[in-house]
Image (cartoon, rainbow, N blue to C red; front, side, top):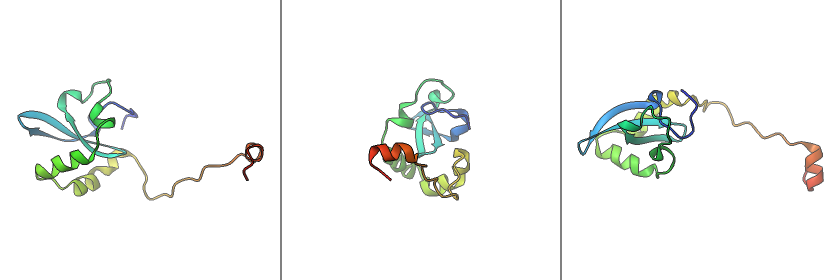
Length: 104
């Protein structure tokens, strides 16, 4: 997957569906599933549906369209390139800086 924080790339698209006569794309990123107009896919411009919309609304739309969002996410989560099996790394602390801040 191309590392792009705001745009929707073709690698992120799971399926294309028609909703109310408009072609939409179901896409996935590290935060989960979302729905965006097919015209936004491949554009270098930011996609507000990816970063600026509450994703719970997408889950409702997916369920209304007959999809199981949890199963869909589980099937395609490998596209996000996130290793969920490894524990999160603990942030290292610089002891010199921490001692100056009063920490440690």
